[in-house]
Amino acid sequence: MAIFEYKGVAADGRSTKGTVDADSSKTARQKLKQRGIFISEIKERTGEKKGQSKSAISFGGSVKSKNLTLMIRQLATMVKARIPLDEALEAVVEQTDDPNLKSVMSQVKASVNEGKSLADSCKMFPKVFTPIFVAMIQVGEASGNLDLVLVRLANFAEANQAMRQKIIGAMTYPIFMMIAGTAITIFLFAFAVPKITEVFAGSNMALPQLTQIMLSISNVISTYWFFIIVFIVCGFFLFKAWISTEAGRAKWDAIALKTPGVGKLVRMIAVSRFARTLSTMLGSGVQLLDAIDVVKEVVDNAVIKKALIQSRDSISEGHSIAGPLKASGEFPPILTHMIAVGERTGELEEMLNVVSDAYDSQVDAAIQSMTRLLEPLMIAVMGGVIALVALSIFMPLLELNNLAASPG
Image (cartoon, rainbow, N blue to C red; front, side, top):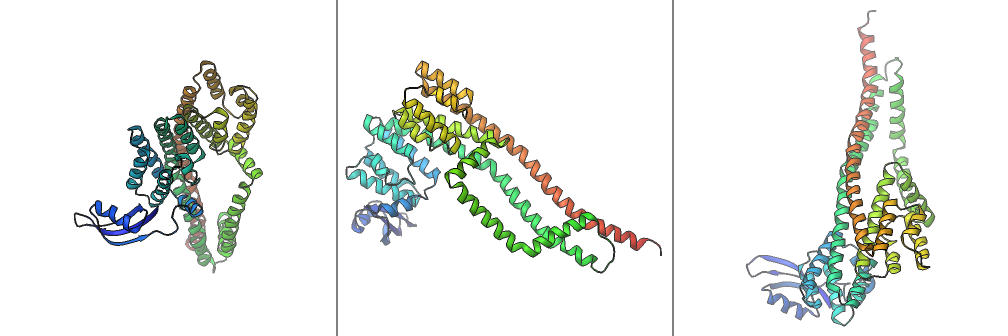
């Protein structure tokens, strides 16, 4: 199965273009003709034929999470309505507007049509379908409950997407303010402050201490701006290289967890992801130890991940879940208590859901609180910098004016 790009005219006379999956150009033309599209140009999209797994994996890596979430919900709805899987996949391919996701799902559909399972077909695209998705689909197909599993996956994906949007939305304004403030500060020191030197170059008056400090900073920025940029860029890449190592990532994540204010938020997000993911997987029939193997990759924090690995070892030896998690010291008491209650009552999945919902609410409140704190703080910092620059300019001007106005 290949992907064909086409241009043509629809039945209503409007120009149209898009993609269609088919075995050949002839089949593609027949499909488009059935839709009432008159083809003016059609060509196969190169590098996306079935079987080219390497390019397909690379190509699928740029699928947007919101488009993937929508696709999962559409697929779950159709499978729950007892639409055959191959028809549901065909409909998903037709409905999605994301060309990358369309290509991926076309190849998944072709693989399923050849007799492979949906889970095995999705494994070809690890950058698109996470281990959670594959593991749950595998269990759903084995148990005959694929419709229920897909619904759970859709709910899970939508909850994660909502959390991601909250974090991005809350941090957009502070990041914009930081960038704007930095740009204004650089402009003032690079262009505004040097004008002071020109104004007072011919005078013999001693400049105020604040003005001298500002001029020194301005001279450094004006003279060594290239080296400063190189230093910042190199520092950024060195930092990225450091946190990409196991030791560096562990150290950085430990610092993040201990940072006042931020550490509490990081831990809450990790705990919420842990609880929601484990609940979703257990509710779908995934075995506990297999679920923990997947969940430890979701928390995205090396310290908590290490605690989960150690807890898994204890659980595999017959211990309860709550005990090892509590012993690690990385999980809040409320989580371990709720897990212990869930284990005793046989309602572990429900308890994890309660914890996840509670922490989602706390994360939302913490993000809003942090945003309310950051906005006036950054405005105050920007205002302070601008005020200092203004003072460094006006103080010598006032002194010069006083000297000119004084008799004799």
